[in-house]
Image (cartoon, rainbow, N blue to C red; front, side, top):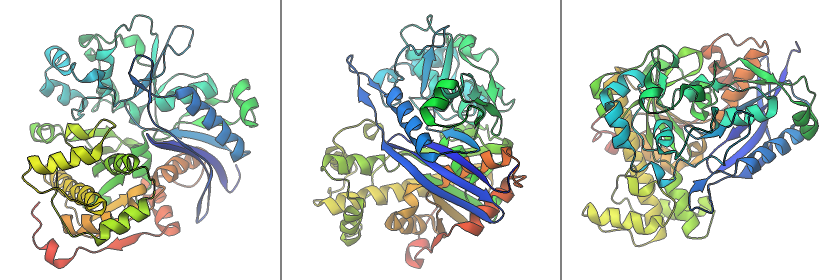
Length: 473
């Protein structure tokens, strides 16, 4: 095995994707972006929101061509969405996007089959209307399907021909027994999901397979190149690369299109209080639990800028910085979930809450960031209360780590320092798990995080005393 490992990390988000090349060696952890592309749901002929998964596959192949010879490939992506395959292994239809409205009316059906408290006691997953269990309940006909593959597993299948489900992502489906670390026995049948759809589970570090002849030809890579299962839920990979000083006294925010706010634990928290607070227990790398809450995230800001016909985030933040502090709204409200006119929705939410809406674009951007920081405050406080983990510092990783205003507002709201970075935590976590599978001296999460801390800078944001003194968690 070479002294240094050179691997390709395919990192897919709901608004963009990238292929990164990571090099790991003694005291070295480098990333190079070789291919970036846009992503987003498309409206099908029937009006549903779908993912153009074949285009994403083509972009992955293009990125792997740009990567050149690598020792391995790992794929991570967002959770809950899937493709259904027939008995011949062919995709039956483009995967639905979790923002499609078809799941709006199925919760009552699932609740009637498995009461919410029982479902949580087995799966530990917070209720979100787009969880895989609700998406499958909304399918018109599952009889033609022989297998269900979550998005990163589907792309891995097209590369290798091997079907399976990586455990950190499987844990988000609400069909997984969080204590046993296996598919939940008897649960799928109760919600009319045929157990045949659930493929064999893999763990981070398992070798999925080597490249099919067609994939090798399309990428220029050798057929012996392995695809390695990583923390294929992108947050699972991101948490691997959080440079914790002490993971037992810290919270994390993986801040991107969504924000995942929580703490890392050794075991799930399955109390009624955790369920009522809508906290989730997702599988992490090395058997850890990601105890967290989903917060709507930078999606709202992105949709606001799209509505204005701009992608100039920096200019928007300058305008927000110049705007006076204003009201906050509940950015987790369901009206912000779907694509559409965010400016109108934000102003309506202000009026409903009894506030005068901001009149300027800068004021609206500030409203989004202040509201996100307030949502982070509530989530961090709940994570601390429900888990018993004392939070002395909050780590922000992902795209939101470069948003200085958001990080400062978060420090003020939470009343503890915020350490921002690394931005590319997801790709770094993906690379580190691959490198370990290839024999790198990274025996545990502590070693991986120490390498991140030694090779990547973070920006420290201290809470302003006047604001921190008023924080109530």
